[in-house]
Length: 114
Image 1: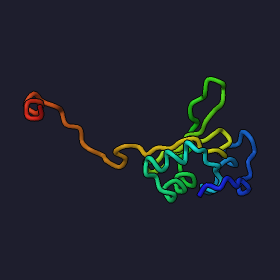
Image 2: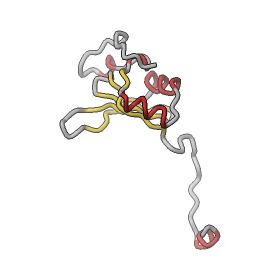
Image 3: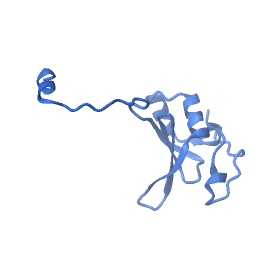
């Protein structure tokens, strides 16, 4: 898993199309990322699918000016460095896939549930 071998990527700085990793093996996993994957029950297959097929958006900019990428796919979010070579953290989005109709909370419902 995530060996850190980046030889499969042909990265041209500033060109997001060439920065896209082809698999999780192209991402060097930080200790923090490895811990979060275990803690949050994100499987290797889910992580790999997110890296391969996820939607990439620019993430937050840190106080020191460093940028991040946010990769989202089927309820999994991964944060990488701006070169998409180092995985920083990951989480599973709660309630992904649930499309529940909103119900107004009435006084009667409040009384029944207190």
